[in-house]
Amino acid sequence: MKKPLLSCLTLLALIMIHPAQARTPEQIHASGVLKVGVPGDYAPLAWHNPQGKLQGYDIDMAEKIAASLHLKVEYVISSWPDLSRDLAADKFDIAMGGVTATPQRAQQFALTAPVVPNGKIALANCANSATLSSLEKIDRPEVKVVVNPGGTNESFVNSHIKQAQIIRVPDNVQNLQALRDKRADIMFTDLIEGEYYQSSEPGVLCLATSTPIAGSESYKVYMVKQEDSALISGINQLLTGKTRQQLGEKWHLSQP
Image (cartoon, rainbow, N blue to C red; front, side, top):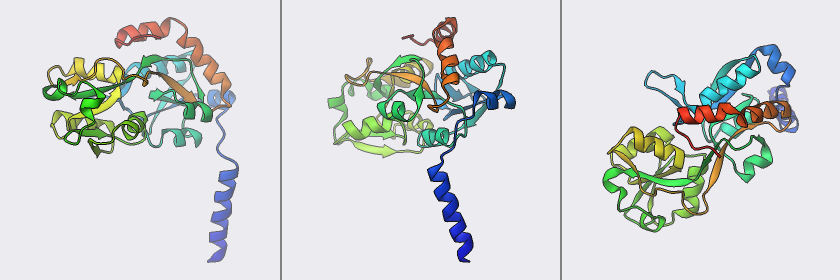
């Protein structure tokens, strides 16, 4: 019984010493498929419609990127807690769908040029939004803040919310439902997502803070493994051309 255990430990050690390598451009082209990882819960960048199909700005952009490389797209559903680990493990070639540029991500991966300007805002049920118009008014013991794990929203909550009640749910879909059901008062999210839900659910979801909270300004980007410079170069070419502007107009997104 000892040999199999030792073999497993040896294999684990080898995996840790030699992490997965990004597929080379030759391997990607030989496969005929560009693998794109998305959590799939972030409108209007990448989310599932009522029929279960992925849609959004980043989904359209993924199709454009693949077409420029003469490839088909294969979507791999990940999650915000697992997205970086899955990319590092080579489960997909590019991470999309609402990735915020952060120093930690820039250190671990190669990030594209900015895709969409952004920043943290507070989204509320419209019945409560007028009374929660600042961070000071939100961070009070009687206020319930809902958040899902693994992304910059959770990091923001952990850093800034000291007195309000924090409700932790598995994913971004349940954040929004908690606001609709009034089980929570507020969630922190990105300006582009907040604007989308305010426009798509008028009278239900409202921006409590209409501009990004000071110090939270950021950009959305795409993320690949550092050694995949050819892929990042091709993506950046699309991001500096007409494609980004056309898709921005389609999905009503500001451009950097």
